Amino acid sequence: MNIGGIDSSRIEAMMAQLKAAAQKPAGPASAADALGGGLGIGGIGKPSATDAAESSSKVSFSDALKGALQNVSDAQNQADDMGKRFAAGDDAVSLSDTMIAMQKASISFQSTVQVRNKLVSAYHDIMNMQV
Image (cartoon, rainbow, N blue to C red; front, side, top):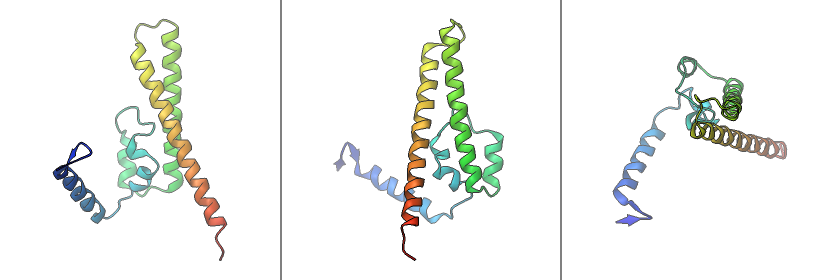
C-alpha cells in the first residue's frame, strides 16, 4: 500500500526505529540535540573534538545553549566573510559556496529565534500557573 508517496513497509520500518530509539535511555547529548545540535544548527562542518568530549560528559543546559549560539554566530561570521571575499573578486570563493554559507547562516538564525520563542512561551506558561 502506498500512503502519500511512501510505501507502508517504509513507514513501519520508521516506526520500529522510533520505538527502538524511545526505549534507549536518553544520553547527555540529548540537551544539545534539543537545541538543534543534532539538526545541524550552525553546524557548517564536521563535528569537532569538543563535540565528542561534550557528549561523553554531562552537558548543562546553559553550556548547550551557549554552544548553539556560538555555532550560529560562527556561521554568520563565515557567511559574511565569504560574501565580502566574493564581492572583492577573490577567485578562491565561488558564488555557490557563498550562497550556501549565507543560507546556512540564515536557517541557523531562524531556528535559534524559534527556539527562543518556544523558551519564552514556556516561561510565560510556567509563570502563569497557579500554585
